[in-house]
Image (cartoon, rainbow, N blue to C red; front, side, top):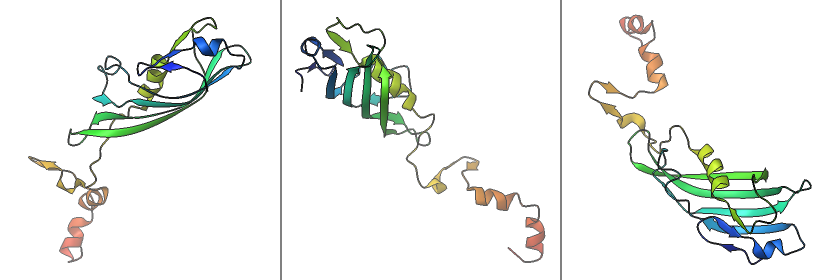
Length: 164
């Protein structure tokens, strides 16, 4: 294992790694993304992001990453607008890290992480399981089965015949 300085800010100090003969560096770290990344999104909060995997120089001399990225984002529930936790997991395989030169001594993972986390934000998310109590003035949520029964053209005929 290399002595890689990895603060919670997503910056890796690669000085020791660059002096090694091998081209692979294992990673197991937590990164805290600044709220500036997600303030214009649906994300209300973001837990520290766990990054596990390896970065290496591929055959074309490009810095490449194979990573597992996990964390939890706080979103507003689409039904009751309460804050809920939404776990996410991203797998990167042979992901090229752009604009990195071999003589650099630091690597900023923040952009790479954010580019992949933003793809995990769902359009709508809810933890509500019982929809029977969801109603308002002049409306209520009904199941598809109830909808079919209400829109059945034979409903009135069935009630006249005493069937239901």
